[in-house]
Amino acid sequence: MLRASFFLALLLHAHVPFLTAGGQASQPASVQAASAGEDAPVAVPPPSAQALRYYRSGNLLWLVDVAWGLLVPVVFLFTGLSARIRNWAHMLGRRWFFVVGIYVVLFTLANFLIDLPLGYYEGFVRQHEYGLSTQTFEKWFGDSLKELGIGLVVAFLFAWIPYILLRKSPRRWWLYTSVLALPFMVFAMLVSPIWIDPLFNRFGPMKDKALEARILALAERAGIEGSRVYEVNKSIDTTAVNAYVTGIGGTKRIVLWDTIIAKLDGKELLFVVAHEMGHYVLGHVWHGIVLGSLLVLATLYAAHRLADRLIARYRARWGLDRLSDVASLPLILLLVSVFSLLLSPAVLGFSRYQEHEADRFGLEITRANHSAATGFIKLQQENLSVPRPGWLYKLWRASHPPIGERIDFCNEYRPWQTGRPLRYARYFHQPAP
Image 1 (tube, helix red, strand yellow):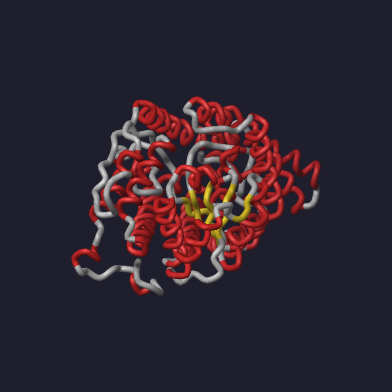
Image 2 (cartoon, helix red, strand yellow):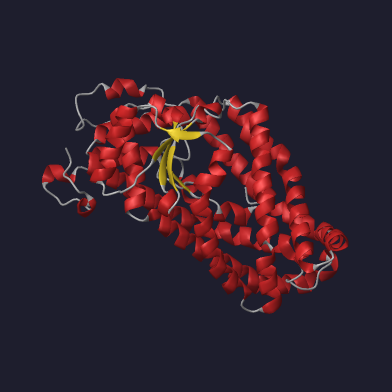
């Protein structure tokens, strides 16, 4: 949802997931998995009726989320609520730093309460309706409060930075804020795996030591030193399956949900891990940081160009006369959300390209095409995905290639059979077995 937590969501997003959407197929993957070998093609199964319902209702909810996320800051501005919150912050804080901190805390709390009913339906009720959640209400609500607490701390500590830049350099604040956002993103990605993620789930070493040894051997072939593989108890939250790469430097790690370990066989899981290793080796985490910085730069610049004109027109209704007034926060977030929405097809297209190349890396290092394809079918089954969604979904919502396209690629991509060079062979320390 495009909410007031836009910056926090952008800067703390430290995961590169293997899959973000899912689907249930009518043909079990175990039937195709019994095929003779890795050269056998795998048919893309059709989505079930339940997966189609989940897909269609999800598209409707996405539209609701976008409209809601744009409407809420408009209401804060035109009702004068933002100005009143600023006035309360002045009475409580007096000093400028505390005024900004108190304002963003009150604003964040108000947004949390406003979003709570919709968030409860989307994150709890709907997931249980489709059999994707195992969370108790206490766990869901506790996690929501933890996210709120993290957001409040981050907002209180850092919200003053763009506002002091607005006061000191009203013409270049957007540039300086974007420059400062880069080290903050790096810091967030560095500490998230060790300080943030464990607040929500229990992380530990893999229980299957034989499988862990195979994964570490694969990491050695990929040239990854000091690799860490963690198993997380996501079965307490969901029946869906996933894996992701997170962290940078000394905190880099591959995280496997215990659900994916339980539901994929050894070869399928090795491809998933190889895909995540591809993100490391190909530098996708750092590319994501650079892209995030450029996104912050572009959206803040666009907000800068429009904000003063809007304030001049509506200053009486909004109760503010300059952008450096902390009561302008809903306006900044509204403009950033609008321009982020406009840029999202390009950003998502870049993400799909990275995921496709990570798939290529995984196939080249494992040559397990059939197992990769059957693994994708299991992901489709468990996560309720539609393998070939419409082009609008792909353009505006899909951060990963559709499952159907990924299975097609597994069926078609075998350059080693025709003597063609591998794109990423230079990264492999040993030939494929």
